[in-house]
Length: 303
Image (cartoon, rainbow, N blue to C red):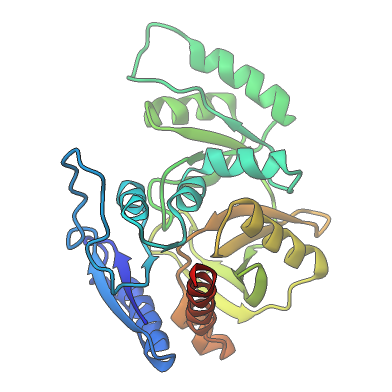
């Protein structure tokens, strides 16, 4: 069995990403799978008006560890089985879409409002002030936080709580015309949880206490093994299922009552090597085994 591990050209050599890639490749090798690492530059999305055809029939699957959704869809139309699918990645990549899907299924998330779409900066109309007045009323008052819908690793995020109307309008003005959401701030306990789900089963869970500002991409965290409660496990598995994911890293916050809420869902969850070092659990092994079984099921159905 052979597959491609598709990753970002820009991020491929950064240690915190390459360590995860190497772990996936070594896990595949242990299970008799040849997993070739390629970037979204290596695999070009070439459109020439003809129906796409699979150019490498000896490749059984693609482990798509990137957020280049256009390329993911291109590969699916070419006949490749992707883990995760283009649709699932896109739903996780856009925090507004994640919130809409999960809340529609009555999955607990912080109260969330999507900031109306704009196409350019403008001072000609005080729509931001009008919007913020309505938003804060619906959210039940301050504090709130602002998140950019697209963004990973804490980049371009302002996760500090906002308690003031002027600060909120200034923050939105500064970020226009990016796609944004406003969420009710969850006080928490100085930590969050990440639960790794593979095939709608919990395979590992960690608690993360942050050292410094979580919004800073260079922020570090102290990781420890966590045993999920029944409600935490159910929340993570349900989120994974409703977003159509093969596997994910589900980030969970606990409110003042200790009840869990979904913070975000990661289609390409990192920290695999950190989890292995701290807990002894190799999440990559579970992911590869899941892929292997799915491909075998697919081949059996064809026969």
